[in-house]
Length: 161
Image (tube, rainbow, N blue to C red; front, side):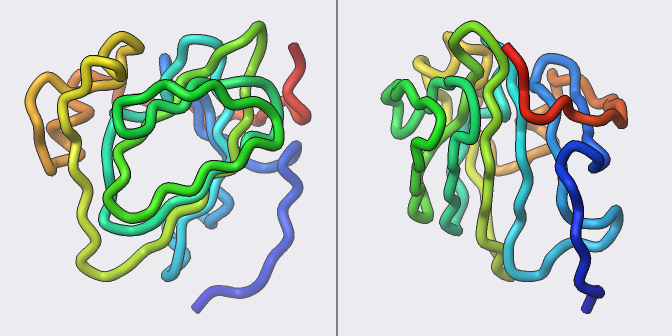
């Protein structure tokens, strides 16, 4: 069990992956929180945050700044600052930056032993570069075509248009 801590988003370590934005993982490196994952992801217009997927645990999302397209159960929803999206376990989803500047999303997901993830094929998500070509339960397969390198950086906070 880790120690308590405080982190300022503007001063926090961020991870940038070409083509899928940057995120602040609030967890210390190598020390995952046991009950849930939490991060802020910043996406430029057109950048997907992930491959379209569903997890066997619930996830929640709060748009902090900017706009994005949430692809949920093969429907596109336009979200803007202060919109909250709840995804019960098994809800397929992905996000794509939209609008005229960066979008920042607070992402929180439950963690449970034995939790699973599934990557279905989605024509809607595919239009945004966020769908696998063949269904899989393997993150390694789902992200085989995505850049594997990342850069440590700092986010400009708050995001500027």
